[in-house]
Every structure is written in structure tokens, then in C-alpha cells.
Image (cartoon, rainbow, N blue to C red; front, side, top):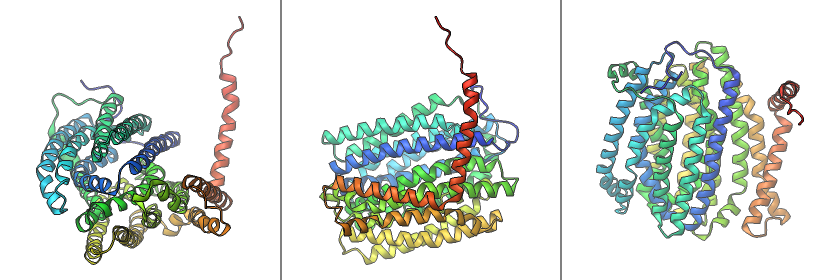
Amino acid sequence: MRGATSAAPSSPASAPPQGRVRSAIGWSYLLTAGRVGSSIVVTFLLAKLLGPSEFGLVAMATVFITVAQTVIQQGLVAAIVQRDQLTSQHLDAAFVVLLLTGLGGSLLTAAASPLWALVNRAPELTVVCLALSPLVLIQGLGIVPEAVLRRELQFRAIAIRTLLAAVLSGVVGVALALAGAGIWALVGQQLVNAVVSLVVLWVVCPWRPSRRPRLGAIRELWAFSAHAANAGLGSLISSRADIIFTGIFFGPVATGIYRLAARLPDMLVDVTVRSIQQVALPSLSRLQQDRAAFTAHLVQLQHLGAVAGLPVLGVLAATAEPLVTFLGPQWAGTEIPLRLLCLFGAVNVYGVLLGPALQAIGRPAKLAAILWSRGVLGVATLAAVGTLMTSDDAVAQATAVALAGIAIQLVVNAAAVWVTVHRAVGASVARFLAPTGPAALAALAAVVVPVAADRLGLATGPPLLDLLLVGGSASLIAATVLGGTDRRLRRLVVVRLRAVRRTQPAQEVTTPRVPAE
């Protein structure tokens, strides 16, 4: 039975009200902050209980499974969210196709697991890949309801689903690790997260598929989704080539060190910039016919992303050494690639919103070309690094991969900003970048805090105390610099405070009084 919902409008979508966009951004931040916050706690606990080898093997298996998930997810999600006119028939057809491809993808990844283990020279990888192969089908079953919620900017529902799945899977993962399950604690965490996420998603989404779908409607989504799937696969290759080649050339230990060092900045970028990215495609898509409004909104989103992302990456870089010391001796040396990957994350802040911008104006082919260019460059560079560094220790290998990633990201992001902002959107690159200057300055101010702490002899206590001291000082300095240099941010805060004050009297008048007894 099909639910009565506005998720499948038959008329062109109009620009969403600013209130809905702000609410969507708020819920997007909440869902990502909750997921990342719980993930950080769980990651710290599992890192203390397990070691680099376990983390490395699961990372090598996950990137293998993610190939199939990305091909399935990226195309039709973007097509559903971006399309001006969307009917229930489009959603029904997409669901059937995703169900079948998800099932096929799970079977294919299970069958290819021994081959992936052979490529990585890690026989124990086979059983891990087999255990994680159902994730492809689970992903396929949840794509259409999630796309419906994202299209309608219903991020509150997505927040409930994401937070609940992250918390429950984290509890299961830590419990398994304490019970001595080893690598299966990480596997169990991923499986529980996917299952809980799927169940809650179908509970909160009102849309239901028809019993008699018209598969011909899929052709109307295919022109866009084929390019978007191509872009998604290119994004996967470009963003996961580091894990793939680290595993193939260096093995589980170097992969585990690199993955932990990369995961922390990745989670901060998730909670800050990618929270905005989730809202960017639906909100920018509604403005695709008005380039002036489109440009202004894109600049506003990039400024918010930089304000939220760059300072916290600076704080993480400042706390790298006490953080790694706190995790235990099995992670010794990880602070070096961690600092480098904070810089990688800072560069990535300037590229996260470019993909949604190109998709919103109907240019997924350009996005695919950018991502595949990065992927080809990354494969060539990382293959060279892997060949040259095979005899070095695991920390040096992880550091070399991080340096290669920074160089690739700088080159590709510079080209991507020019192609997207100047050529496709027709805006000024300087206008796009200028508002982010104060946030970059705040990040630099945070990075120098541990140098001052060392010279003053302040960071000489237990690792946890040093972590709190350096982290607190870096956060305070970054916030002070940002507040003192970012006029746009101060103006935004003042406007929001005035809006709150204007609504207070009305709320006081309309609040019902409880009659006296």
C-alpha cells in the first residue's frame, strides 16, 4: 500500500523556504554530530582494546564492499533528489531495480572475496569480506526511502535513524571487544549499524512501494543517474585509493595506522562540512534556474562549512600527540600521519560542496570527469609510493601515503574549484574563497598551541590531562581569532539573536496561562 505523502510530487519543485533550509541544516548537523560523536567514543574504546592489524583488515574489507554500495547508491539517489518532476512511478521502479542490484551485488562480492584476499596477500580477509557482503543488499533496500526524506529536507527523521543506529552498533561493538571477539567486534558493529539503520528508516519514512511497479519509468531517471553513478564510482576510487593501495602494498598494520589517522579528520569533516553537503543538493537544486541566488547560496554554504570545519581540524592537529599517547603504545607514531591528514581534511573542506553544486545544475558528467581525474592521478601516485616504500616501517609507509594524498588533493581541488565555480556556475573564485579566510587563520592559530605549551612546560602531565589542556587552549584561541576576524559570522550571529528576541514577546503573549484553582 502506498502511503499518502508529498515525497513524490508531480509538479516542478520550487525554492525551499529559508526556514526549512535552516531547519534541515540544523537537523543535518545533529544527525552527523550524534553519529560522529558516538563513533569517536567507540573508535577510541575499540582502538584501546584492539590494534592496528584488526583495524587494517576491516578497512581493507570495507573498501571492497563499498565499491558495490557506491555503484548502487550514487546514481539513483542523486537523480531522485535533483529531479524537478518526480512521480510515484519513478520511486517504484527505482526500488525494484535497487532491490535486484543489491541482491546481485551481495552475491557478487561474496563470490569475489577470495580474490580480494589473494590480491592483498591476506587469507584471513576472505571470511571478513564474506561476513560484510550482506551490507550491499541492506544498502539497496534503504536508498529510495532515504532519498525521499532528503528530497523533502526531512532530516529530523534521518537524524533519529542515524543516531539510534550509531549508538546501538557502538554498544554491540564495544561489548564484543570486551568479550574478546577481536576483529569480529568491528564486523559486528558494522552489521548491527546497517540493520538498525534500515529498520528505523522504513519506520520513519511514509513512502511505500506499489505492488505493481512500472519499470519503464526508470528510463527517465537513467540519463542523470548513469552520470551520477559514474561520478560516484570515480569518487570512491579517488577517495579510497589510499586504503586500497596501502593494503595491497603494505599490509594490515600500515593500513590500520593510516585508517585510524584518517578516520579522525574524516569524522570531523563529516560532522562539520558534510552535514551541509547533505542539505546542499536539495537546496541548491531548487535554485538551479536562478544563477545569482544559486551563487549566493553556494558561497554562504561554503563559508559555513569553513567556519565549522577548519578550526576543529586545527584543534585536532594540535592534540595529535597526547591523543595517540592516550590510545596506547600499539599506536605509537600515528600522530605524524594524523597531523598530515588534518591538513588533507582542511583542503577537502574546499571540495566537499562542489559535487552537489554540479549535480544541482545538471552537470554530473563534469563531476564524473573531475573525480575520475583525481582517481587516475591517485592510483598512479600511490602505486609509485607503494613501490618505493615497501621496505620501510608501517608508520613511515602511512606517512608517505598521507603526503601523497595532500599533494593530489591540492592539485585536484584547485582545478575543481575553477571548473565548478568559474566555468559551470559562472561566479568569481575569489568571491567563493574570500569568506573562508578567517576560519583558515583560526585553524593556524590552533596548530601553534602545542609549540607554545612545550616551551612553557605545560604539557608534561598524564596523556589525558595533556589532551584536555592542549585541546581546551587550542579551542579557545581558535574561537577568539575566528570571532575577531570574521565579520560575516558576527553579522550572522547578530541577525539570529535579533530574530530570537523578536519572537520572544509573541511567544509570551500566545502562551496559555494555567487557570488558578
